[in-house]
Image (cartoon, rainbow, N blue to C red; front, side, top):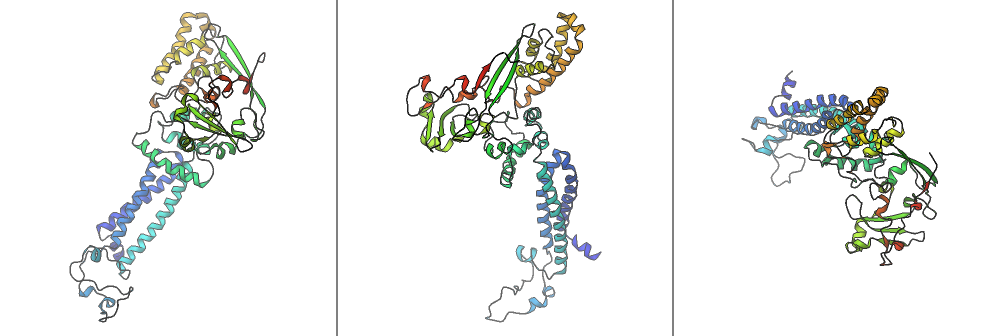
Length: 485
């Protein structure tokens, strides 16, 4: 009991011990809570890391603390032996301590492992430290695993990534973890992602993150290290049929079928063709804006190693060799498939898809028109959008009472589906809509392919005629087919 009291005989040791034990208990709790995705557990673990260090420092100070002034009686025989005059003091022979009131270094922080009291404290501290290191390592490992999950990316931070997470859950990559694309395999990029994530955590904690989240992501790992772990654009795919169905806003919801034969192609640089030629070959480009919608220069490395260059004649004065060297990018998958996962479809596209799938009954008169009136333009809040959607029920009750009686269930189903579409298109907290982030696939709502095609001319000519520009003919990428339903 006497020895136990010695451990807590001064305030510094007691305070350090309290901090240390508190961190151990909380780490135990957090190690259990982290898998449930509690954000307080996540941020708490980070705080506890610093709390553990603080407790260790205070406790260590208490271990070496010696408030008692030293007297002749306190001197051990080892100190009492005088050093012979003229002999050099060896490093292992301790200095003879000064008597009386000690100074800060020589009295209050005396390191003497021959002192039983100090030695017992140190052993006690080392034992606790080993336990704490084991717990922190276990918790840190589980924390690292949890931080790689989509639940962490989309739900822990909640508000910042809500639009991206909701659209992710409806995307073709909904079963792929976020880290598989944003981090990829290997320890190097894992460490980089954690370092880059620290400012993001601070931005979430202090509510300083941008609205909307900026795109494209800066310093994103090349698609050759991530996307191509599953996809293989160099493999020759050939042609694929794509059928698009669109509905007019008239009473009959007139259907239009657009059937395209997409020339996907692929292959190695010396034999690549079709759309995937862009990644099969070595293509460099120079973006002139942050969202990479304005491309001022393109360079294509041929099979002979020669670089063929193209430039935007309207912005040639802004481009020089130094800018090209420092800012050029090697074209990869995400330069076209930049919304491969976080796809913000417009209400028009989502309503057409629901009608094509039969979720919204296309036999309901003016259902396309009324749906568009409720959702486009974007509503200031989800609640207001839902109120407009629910008003569709009153529209049929008033103007089409017979339809309302016969197709009441279809009207209710359409309203429920439109409320789901509201969730995919209305994000007022983050100032995000379907018009926020460009989609480079195609060239309907955004420039897409036309960022380069039909715009850039070879640097070997100054002509600005259409014949000199990079081709923009429709049949370069697809053929229009008719009669296919």
